[in-house]
Length: 198
Image (cartoon, rainbow, N blue to C red):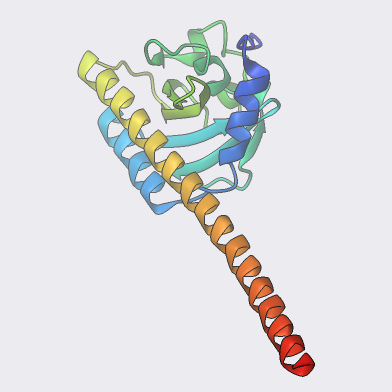
């Protein structure tokens, strides 16, 4: 198994990716998009994941149950995909691919034989993670399927951005509410003090 290359901007990319990991696990919209990926690519399963400096975090799944949602980055297919931002990464048969044939995901129980993924690219141009389709049988993708995978990746990124902004807005509102209560308390105390003096 070949260790995936490290993107030149990995420190910044990883920091950006980690910012999204807490907002979207098992989000309903992401689950729908995972299902769409599997349908378009005609696979049993699909994943949406984010990748930081050390781990791959599974945000959404279709067609599989995962007891663990974090995996070491160096063992994952998607760690290769974030280096290829111009076109989908397609692995028709991982058993014949030098990068993956010794991977525990290929040699273990319920092996990943087919893989196709595309990176989730944010507005800053960082590949934060991937949307991917996987199957236990060899497959190929036609150009139409590849193009739709790219379009779905953009929709996933839109959902991620929306969830992040929503969380930021919620936190900002909480802080404003605290400040408002503090201001009201100070104002009330000041008015009471003024009345007592008069």
